[in-house]
Image (cartoon, rainbow, N blue to C red; front, side, top):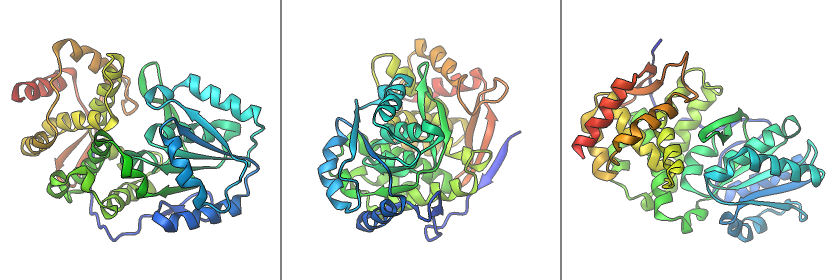
Length: 358
């Protein structure tokens, strides 16, 4: 069955929703630190752990002093940056450390980092002792508009993206745009890709966002993108219906991301999503929009030897049903369809058409 959805999006519509505590999220800027301090006081965690990678550890001297109620004896858990840390091995190591340090069900994990840290830390927290409180503090644009919001978390398995995970809301999300000051260009572009996806789904701001340099994005731009995703998640937390639309571009995208990593040429999540959006737009018959996207983010030609490995990865996609590869497509801006069966022949034709046009 193919399901359809037309979004009627308003930037003014409230986009906070309640989670485990009396707080809602996300909170932006300086007000967020005050609200997080209140949360820390209410939770009164027995132990506090801050998960970072070797890059985002540099954020702690800025982050920690802004929280008066943070346990002064917090422990820092540091992993290597990159998708390699979203593994069962790393997860097991972190669970072991929590046990070693006596973490109980009243302990707290604060995830300070990009999408990998938010995904990994949330997975660790949601599974340790059947769930302990956790907070996401995204430090990349991608994490702010995507990974930190929505309650989907997970790790990679057998070379495939996010095969193990849970649906668990964080107790709090703090978005501090000051963390973006040192963000590399490719990471700005990675987050920009998810914002462009939101524009296609909502039918708003496509041309405007496409024309913007990612580094010129404002806090208001970020808030509107978060608002759009949060609105959908509030209505369909477990992804039984309209939340599936947020997977636009992600079927080919996840396959491209895992294939690139396995080939020794890893790319950002956003770069993979751009590849997926190109394919989805062609499959949707929206050639004009695909051409507009290509002017900003050109299609990366897929070599013939990559076609079968990419398709095999899509056969393992979480959205599939009865062995059929299911896609999210667009009828037009703001009108999406999901659970669309795509065959190998149809997908290959789209990829070859993109190759020929490049």
